[in-house]
Length: 477
Image (spheres, rainbow, N blue to C red):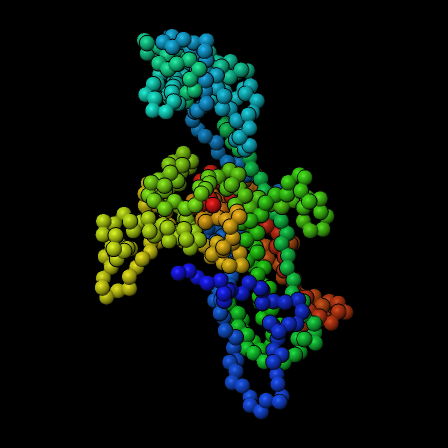
């Protein structure tokens, strides 16, 4: 059996630009001698319709004075190259050999960079050299005797009497583990500078508006309306104004999640009225600089171990939160339940001590395997009017590291603690654009124009900063 397509679910917003049967009472028949029994208050059949909650849980909001936000993130501390060629000029078993480093890449684009001056190995440093061939057991320890920084060729002397153990033209991995010098020799010939990466983002202006005519504001309301935040009354326009406010507050979060920068040849970048630059949203940044699990959800512990092993290669943050859709949540519950030796019957989930007098707990809120993982349902991924049910570009979940990180703040001019995810909004002593709302017109208490209406305006200017994107994981189809 399956869920039938009809009757379906309503996808149209309740707020309309004009009066319609969906937001006004029209079914009055004076030929009917009997008055109907009516319920005064509308029924909230979709519950809490707002999807905003994600950034409130994991982020913070801070002011910014500029149209451009820049920050620096630390690079790696140690030196390792994984695409190094054992040059054919050296024979297998030779006491010395040349190696050409091929994986000096631009860290932002993964494109080949100018290799000149990029090699971080120096004369006197000691190396671990490992053969990359599958199932190989061959490796060497060596010391650097010369470095050609222009060509990326490193000459080494092996510590083993048998010399190079792997074949010529093999692809090897090299990392520096120390150094060694003779007595009375000069100091290290070269020095290394810190490997910092500079990132930036630009805030976007988000707007909305609700308009109602003065005459309609004086109309009798026949049904008592209620909103998710307790707003109620008998005037229908209050409902639409409140829904507009809730919708705008949701967009403040979803715009930060979904925003993308406008590409050079795109139509959006040439516009002069509707916004022409875009911004780096969370999904865009994680897809560009983070980690991606594709092809569905990890449904077995071995598959989830692949995620953990990738985290080991990144920042290794101790605590992480998984924001997931409903199916991914079920998959995690089933994966964890399968670890119980009595789980085959499906009656001992949770702490594995369900009592016959208590409701059966078939879910988990978190687990520990190398790191702590806490699971949270993300309504945005389930909501039928947002990402719920889409196929192309579907996202099943997002792993967010908990806590904060230290970055160099260009505005403050010093290192500062920042949550991995936080929002920067434009503000100064005279203008705060975090959340602006104002009323114009000549109705509803406003006296700013000759138009017989009330305009409720909403505006915010903000950008999200995704620090340490290499610690995030995006789960997508």
